[in-house]
Image (cartoon, rainbow, N blue to C red):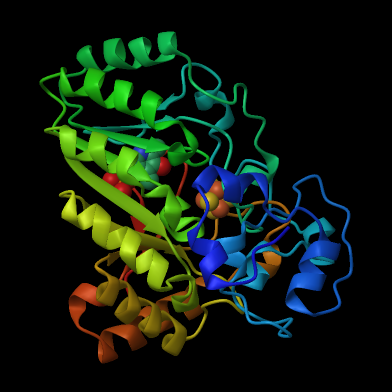
Amino acid sequence: MIPRTETALHNHSWQWYLRHAIRNTDELAKALKIDIDPVPTAFPLFVPAPYLSRIERGNPDDPLLLQVLPRHAENQVVEGYVNDPLQEVEQIKGNGIIHKYRGRILIVTTGACAINCRYCFRRHFPYAKSQLSHRDWHNVMSYIKEDPTIREVILSGGDPLLMSDNQLSDFVKMLGEVNQITHLRIHTRLPVVIPQRVNETMLSWISGTKLRVIVVIHANHEHELDDQVHQAVQKLISAGVSVLNQSVLLKNVNDNCEALCNLSWRLSSIGALPYYLHRLDKVAGTAHFDIPATRARKLIAQMKNRMPGYLVPRLVSEIPGSGSKQELIA
Ligand SMILES: *Cc1c(COP(=O)(O)O)cnc(C)c1O
Ligand code: SF4
């Protein structure tokens, strides 16, 4: 039931693509015309068709494929790689609020995503609830009002755009009534994974708020950014949104200067600016994606020598207990 043509890709809702996403290695192998070894995993394969369509057929080393394909290396225990390196589980169990940095709070809206990225911390996360209730949202408002330094609310997850537009619209309305909040940020991979998510219903609540809206998408390789993603980003921009991108530095996906530079140029061409390049969090089962800090710094130094400054992302890692992301200077 996988659409094979561009026309088919245009004709469905984002929910349709989620329902019909590829969920096992046999289907994936067939679609990509390669042999795939099934790997036992508690974090299943999950790839929707729009993303699948950008993976090169017949290429087992495709940089997009490597982001979604379960591999045996995931089941190897590597010292120093743990289930919750950022020590966030405790913080999330309550009302979904993570308040680590001054001026902004992050809300874990849902544990679900539109794709299962193999390098992600989500693979081990015991999400207490799948979605926030109406009561939780009211608690968020009370929390904000108790701390006048909070000016920005960041919707994160999982992927906040898996919430319905009704829920999002209600929340944004509530938030708009809290005077101290001026900025709404949305951390989402959906405009990349299923660009059809950016539809008229979504654009109407975005255009309707007086909040400054920033959408931070997540792409790691230029091939993820096809014409449909370009159109989705353009629609967001037309609705007044600033679009940024965050990437993760991943071995064999984007760990060379050319891949990183091409990603930045492509992002800028479609209307998104590079924001962060994250070093991998040391999550169990992801060690085979990791790049040493010295190599990461060197890559950024090379980028600086080749690219306009605004196209060089900030290389950061997250250190539990610190007041912001930690930048690694090249
Ligand atoms: C990353 C993160 C933010 C956002 O940090 P910025 O540097 O503003 O992008 C906010 N809160 C939490 C808990 C985070 O992990
Ligand atoms: S979209 Fe983001 S949160 Fe979801 S699995 Fe991928 S990296 Fe993790």
